[in-house]
Image (cartoon, rainbow, N blue to C red; front, side, top):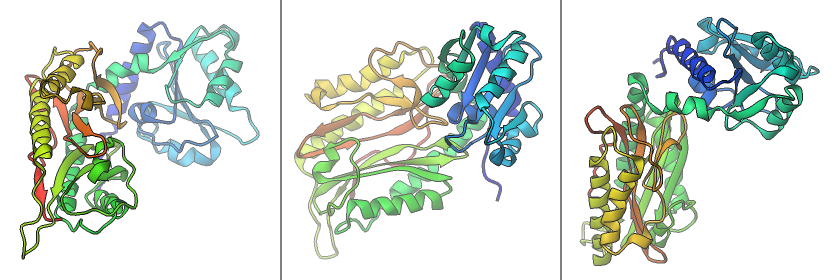
Length: 393
């Protein structure tokens, strides 16, 4: 079966849009290293090596766009969609060659001036410091800035193919959460359940599993708990926060379950009244925040909707993180749903809605869905139940 992916013809349009945005920003070139920006523009998931791989996108009309790669990676570089489609040329460098000098020459020729006169370039945000310093050496007069200033607006608004991949990833993650919640859980360690999650994510179609939080009992009050050797017991909650990628696009779902320990001979341990009260507030807050999503609403407003519900119930100091983050080729990307972010939502933006309440030393809970800002309101990708799941374990 063919792996899901963005259609290869899409990359020429992305590169043209990036070139236009960079030119409008007064740049001579975009220099894009390994990471999500390179995946977005060229469809190339290169290895993050000490050997530089860099996409050179000059802004001068008609100038060639070139993917610079070490020779030992020539084959995968030439197989990327932007190269096979003829939009990007591939140039390789030898082990004994200075790749920075090669990059400087490519930029210089495209701009039409000596390397020492190149005026302004933007580099991808995650470019290694060693690579950046090398580029500054060979382009000594250039003003360096972050490529996110140019690319973020392009990447934030997902097209239909991107939404399809995000939905497919979300539905696969839904199935994993429900399978794990069905047990067995009691008597197993968090780490053991986490291993099951990793396997199930791949079995359900993910390219890879990216994270697998399993936080039981008092650990559920730690939002980024690392699953360990604690044994799961009856009569406690578990926060399950998992995700991976399908076709490069991410899933991210959190559900909180209560493990009753019920058996055929007994009803088990019911949720503690304090936990039920906390969860009811959280459920209301998460639903209200998701319902508030629509074009023109500021990100900070979505955060406030969730936060106001939680604060009114007396848990304001127990909600210790933002309400959400963008998602796409990166698990965390723009836009961020947080106080102070006045950026307004637009159709195609994809992000999490994940308020949480945490009572340190006792228990906590979080509910998370991936939401697309639709033309007229929210499109919620995750469909796993949000009501508290009381499971036998």
